[in-house]
Length: 440
Image (cartoon, rainbow, N blue to C red):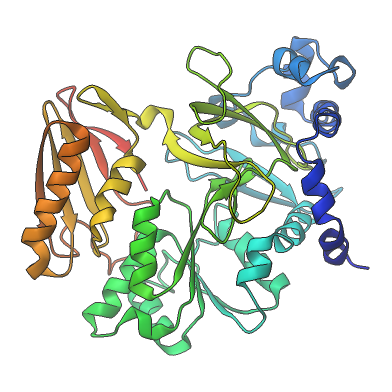
């Protein structure tokens, strides 16, 4: 019996044991001892004076194991993170995009990556939504991060037809991708939401209805996307929309068929804290600290992700017995409007409830007022849409909101190759100078 068959057989039991305290504690003790194999953690844990045998409870783990800050990983020699000696196993190097300040190194072994792919294929979302008859267009970058490479391996294991486009390069600029979509008619599109919007608008420029391509599922990653924006994107293609989010250094959250993110607690231990260091409860906004417990090449202990999340109280209707969560964004991106605080993703959620169909928007927060410029294709809808957006935002923000609608391409040239992530969508100018608080 192969690994996939074994995992399919064992998967329900693994999930069932995920949050059992004895199982969690065993995995955390093992993770601490294993971390000593890397130079970085050998130094860090020696200074803290802690080993696996000192962890008698989950409380011990939280109190005795020091936090790992992102800045530490950015500044060190990448090889100091390795727990595997080069040459012993095939190693693969990648790094984060660096949009939040410096690149975090990421190491995986070939075996580790393949095991994680086999495990991913066992997840209900892939079992339910993919079949060997599918044709999958992969438009994630194949370099720097593991996104494109991992997606390619998942689809190989699923036995589908793969159309690797690896977007953002001269071989597959947006116009070429749109042309390939017309000719090859994939059933699944893997792309960042901004790119998928771009392809849809190129097709519409050419008089082609994106729905005619036959895409049934869009799997978005690499950038945050509000549920309302994802729904608009899905409607453009006549497809179901799923958001796959996470961080390369720790792994991804698990989406279900309802586009709800689940914590992979069978391979990751998550702590949540308020700004003052006190532990948060489910349903509260809190900063996340995570410990992946299956890492081989590069162990990470109590990593401050920088994300603010909400671990939700209720179980998802999909039936997957794992905690669900919402990712609100990086703590540093939170901004004040009037007497309330918002994350950019929450403003995006409000905006796309009005069914905008352009690629891009910009929200500028100023003292006493907020300015919104958004792209939309159908000009005859501008008057009603402007009033709707203004009314919706003013009812929540309790201050004046100015709305301007412009044709697609006015804010973002969707026909050109983008060298990285797009320009900011939300700008905080309350301090008197523009400060970018969210990218995509």
